[in-house]
Length: 412
Image 1: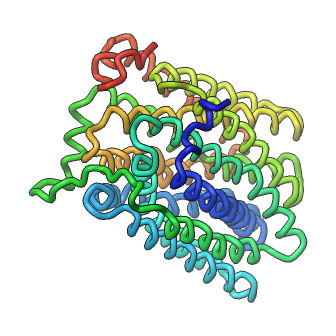
Image 2 (image 1 turned 30 degrees about the vertical axis):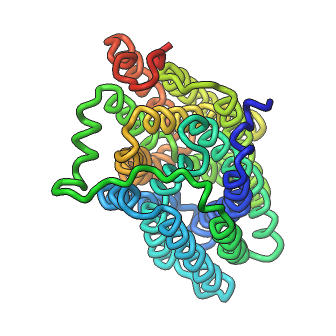
């Protein structure tokens, strides 16, 4: 148990984790409220509209990828985080005000989803590499896993609370709570002991700095294989807002409380996966294979589930697998990358994993609208099994072990 939570020995990490947990609860409340608002209040149960919102929210991860990675590697990360977090807080407050006053329209949600996406695209690579400044490389893998534990504990709490808030006082109040929750993370950044930070090596600005990350990743067979797997899972598999909302409304005919509970059930799986990752000494490429195969199996079980509670159980399986894939890829890519390149590599990872959403979400939404939610889950299952095949090919070529710098037994 002590090994699982070893990063909490650091004062800076404890302060950061506390602020992030509060903010993460607000984030998940907003995500659940946003899906419910679009699906039940602004459209007539249109999964395609939810898919468009997802595309607008995650598309900037791909569009801004070169510049977000450049910023993470060249500028002071703490100051960047304060700017991006404050921006997202203000956006949430404005959207909440529009919703509470009854002025919100579908195009408003589209615009704010895109603006949120732009802020998050600049925030994410900085936030992920900033962990190394808090704990150093020795505990980096553990800190990444604990961050995921916090994020998914909030995922378990946030949607359920959002369901209660929506049912009692209305959707807009979930957005307002998220806006105020950013005060917690901004306060934590202010309270950090800057003398105890371990600054990552800053890259020097040179001609071609922005595209250097692409060339670096392309030269590494292990990183290429990981990114292909992330593209498949991220584009066609990580569409839980569509899967959960359409199954809740169209198949099980539940209300906002039942919808929020389903999101929380998936979070139980992701939090369990995060704790398992935190207990491991080192991330291994073989875990990507196992996670992808289990993800495909979980989506298959969810698609075939005859009742609400069996579907909820399948979501737990999907959550464990998804977290295994995301955490393992994060730790492997950071630990095997030169410190001055980490921001650009992480931006590329996020761009591939989340930036494919503009392609996949509308497709999955169309499938849910025209063929049914169960067939949409079938698309996710196919993505998981395809990613597993990519991992098998990579392992069979035995290039992964040799190229995992600093992790000689990564494929075991």
